[in-house]
Length: 640
Image (cartoon, rainbow, N blue to C red; front, side, top):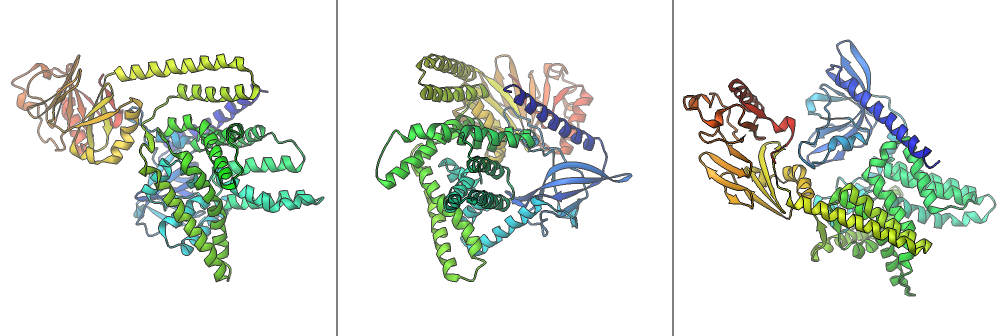
């Protein structure tokens, strides 16, 4: 049985993946001019667009409309006059696009991320390229979106304060598109960002309050069945309210398995209940295993189930407030024990003061969650006094929560940034933590020697990996749209030779280079302006006529707007934005130099070139017989 279930899981995942690839291949090889897509989610506000998830049903080919099932993320401009609602269809007069593949070392793989969500396509819809058409869409998914949209409108009418409304919308409906980015950053650095994503915590709060409020029903002969029906209905209603988000469905499944076991007098082993709920979810969606939310959610609950009691017993007090704060702290610490390695692996940071903020935030969540739902319901009733009381309580609790999460940023070292663990280190850390629990539970102290062995392997692996990375010297021409960027890694310093605009383009740096910097254990980043100069232990950067020369043992690179007029170089990074109408090589054809040998120099086309300029340079280089490399299509070039 222990081998059968993983094999069945692997088979199910393989079948899902094969179906996904078949749909992608079928759409890629079929020429079409338009497609029909049914909107499945409410518009989600992004930085400059609204994004919706859609199910493509048909495409228009030369022979007419043909079925072509596919899932896509569609982006619409924020100034769009018409935003589609769930269940409506969009007729789009263009083709879908595949998400871009990562072109730089350690760059976030957006295509892979979407693949595990079953999404294969993206598209940006200009207002003139689409129109909304009637479509008979029905089903729980669309009902839930309408209910969620109604609740959102009720919250907006009840709360005029933007930050309070944004927080309640995130906590109740799982949509944080109306929260300011700096406020989201405060929740992240304080370790309380989990309250913004509707998950097991939120369902758990409702489950606890409902079970306490309905527990009296279990005293009667048939009361426990009525208790099961009412509790199930209310949990499903909350799942409907959140738009049937996967995280809520996971937690709801977990709670329902627990309740069914309790009602039918089955001994509910918490870890088995957790595993069974995970099995049910993976049975229908094997790719859920790769979702960050799934991993963190189940690891957090597993950590609480395993470590809460041992930690809670460390301190005993009769004072009610102190006892509550310590228990809340124990829950927070136990949840972090197993999520810490995975969280560092994905996000490369860790909130140092999570233990200080989380107990208070969770306490306020017990007010905010039922309060937000009560506010939505009371707004429908003609009881103004009751509405005022609920409004004041919820509003003050929201302001207190938002202020509380900004407090840690005022403390020194509030967030450990730039942390890096690879997959081997994550697995070894989890084995160490779970092994420590096994030793504590079984009291078999002989297992300590095995733990010591795992700890030694982890130490040797991490140390060797860090030293190897520290001493590795690497030069990379990065693929950054609209910029030419050369990075020179020397020990723990990263030198960047780039145009001035890149220094101001924080988004380009964050998406293209930040993960690479963290992976290479970089502590200091030094920007070198074009024509700047400097020297590291083995790399020399010097200003020369018309550009910059980079030299290292075994190679040289010239970066400039034109071709070098003299001296031999191994690489030429062309940074010109100007369209070359004349062949720049013809001027120097009468004075051949070593650099002009086609086999000697590789020309690299900078990312700031426009499409026409880039194609013109390719034409010129091909005519001269020179080798060239285009990072925008072929990816970053590692020179050393």
